Image (tube, rainbow, N blue to C red; front, side, top):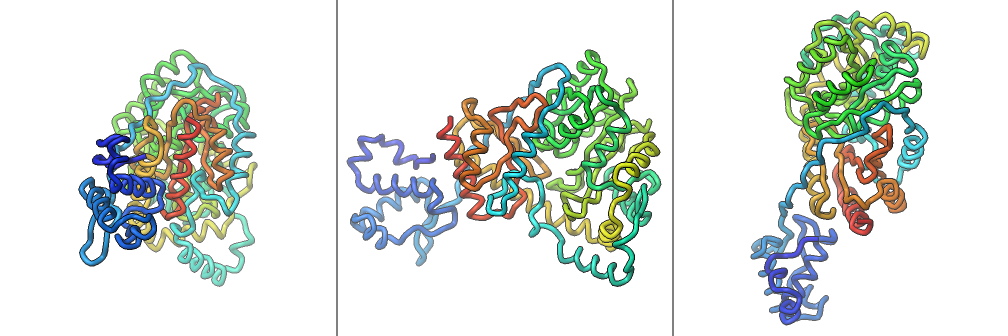
Length: 486
């Protein structure tokens, strides 16, 4: 915890000799515990004098000491306030070093158990990557849905067979120009979310027993899909800012018979990494040389903190080997489950698999999203949300810097809404998750993001809920737990 420079400099013996220094130290402890937060007024000189049974002169001297050290600021005719403090930003985790051999995946049971517990309504959600309803254009979507229901009474009760609603596919084709991709509406297959898009694409290009290269750590939903299809995952070292190591991937392709890759090049989950354009070009060339398909999960691509959004890897694809997947679940409406894929040369297989799997994506939801896109509200909505998520990320990183032990590391994403936190080695993520839940806080333990359940002292935190005193207190509690366990 932080201690003012002047107080710390004196040492315990000297501090004991000066009553005002003891008062200052006690107030610092209350500030660090979150009793008084940045921008809040501390008790008046007279009130603190009465509370702590010390003279007004002693309190005044303590406040002046803390003002000199930059912890308090005096406002004329108002009193003393806690000053905003800049804490050293934690370092980023190192490049990951997963096992070098393909492995059978075993994460479904653990993931489902964690997620079921985390869904309780009273929990402070620092676990799920679902935007808070306050961040979604709910009222606008509801109005569009009501208008469609009045105008087209059969919309709720009919199929729009694969590839999906033509008007929606046209709007998505226009949206994809923002990613650098020129695709026709007929190239697009509508799915029930991005997860189904990735699953259909994996089924189209690979079979049980095949080896699938993934980032490490990677999204547990991808690992669950690989596990459910009877395939093996090959975890590849990944940089916390630039994404998968192309040198490590090239070496993996030489050593193993990789059937396909599943990657999240833009704001990956859980790292938040964003691959530079030059790396995207190199990735496409590397895989094209061996005719290896790439399933690109771009679900977070629109969540860049700044405009423009990153180009898709698909934009550099000239051979139809990139199967692009995305959805509106992280931006417009998680519950609508509107996703899509541009599966390149596997379009016919993907359409067929969609038909035999779930027949069709609900028509009304497709019409609602199409209506929202058609009236030009999507870009305006994104412009409003980008600074919100950027600020949430900065506040969460600052809270980690304030409350967690020295040596804690955290990623610095430029988009999305996840942070990957490396804790001291003695901290067990599953045990921390258990203790956090007892205190009403949900986190995601690091082993969920590895086929081998590595990353035992890592956790993933999200910033999808509005910043509040309750969220800040939850982060303070997690920091205190980390101190205890470390």
